[in-house]
Length: 68
Image (tube, rainbow, N blue to C red; front, side):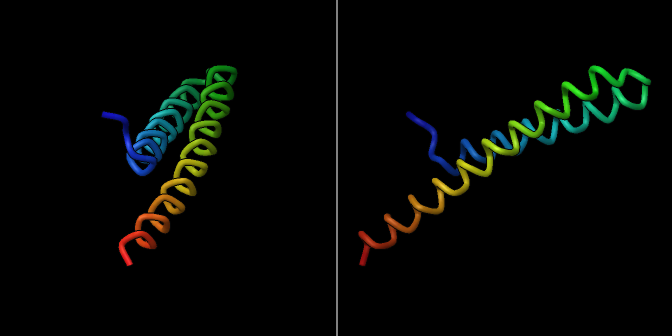
């Protein structure tokens, strides 16, 4: 069963949060190169989560319009 846009957005929000935490840990250990790469990854996950959230909103609007 395919995931809904909402579920996929939530998954990417979680991935972004995890990457942010890992970046903070790496930065705290003085590994700035790894921290930078993890921050870039977190940004990409956040961007994807935003796009999927917009899709979920549009999907919700279409579904609500069909129910009327």
